[in-house]
Image (tube, rainbow, N blue to C red; front, side, top):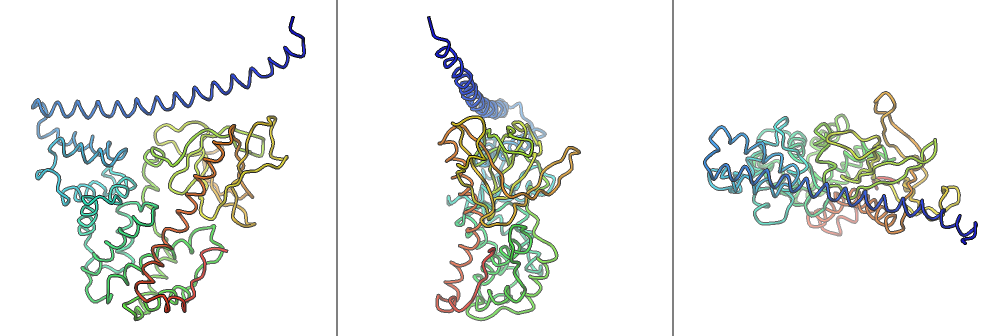
Length: 418
């Protein structure tokens, strides 16, 4: 006969094992759903292709091919372009110019092609994609357009990826195109290239709430000395750029488009338990585009997140203090906070559905395994580093080549944040 103490011990372990099995089953089910969605999309594409081969598709159905291609492209850019080529949508079979024209025309506001996957496709380093990028930039008409307006238009036609090498190539193509349309404005395209990065970083320092020290006009002018083939740019140009960005920040593509693509291919997603004023609450967390989003449940379609936390300037650490512990000794804790003493600035939706600003010292999340904790911390750290370093790395690399290391050392560039 089993002793009462031993029986109670066994019963105490059962709920924990049962919960782990349920969590494992949930993850397996989510993976199965993703596989089924991909399989369904492939079947739909095959059906359309067979209809075309059988002569069922007429000229009117070119619109159906286009709509299916856009839907596919928003989920997988490579597959979207492949679908158009396989269905003979392009008269010349899908040249670099034809693909660029598709991205440019269908990426216009309201046409249905999302800006983020456009940026993903243009950022690939394959020869074909690089040629498409050049053709895409050449579709922009910048003649007689102010530098700032041209940069705004270019950055609105797609969403910049986070990798420094991709940003470098995309902005290099912009500089070449702008100088081609406005000969004589810059002594060399490198000057336009460097100024474009300085402008984007200026936008961050002026309008990102996590940046404490705002760059002044004098600092902006000083940091761009000597970039025009060894000489200075016209001061009036730099003043106009500063004033334009100061008055009107860059608008980031996809902010007002559907949220579906944003959460379709995240860097990481999963269930965590978040500490709130009322205790601990389960949240579905998604990390993408250098932000942490959390939902009450797994989002469906274009469902808006419950809260958004920009990751710029933040750090994620393993927390082991006793005050963070829940009723289980086997849980692990992660704290996300500013890399300093200032409060976090995030946003959330209240009970009325209104978006409100939230200021608090940190966010604390709870997970059930040490490996899961490490993956979340690594993912957040990667997003923070990507956001902080990409533009600065590209800017300084080109600056060295433009004015030389010795000249660079004499220019004081203020840090983005303290």
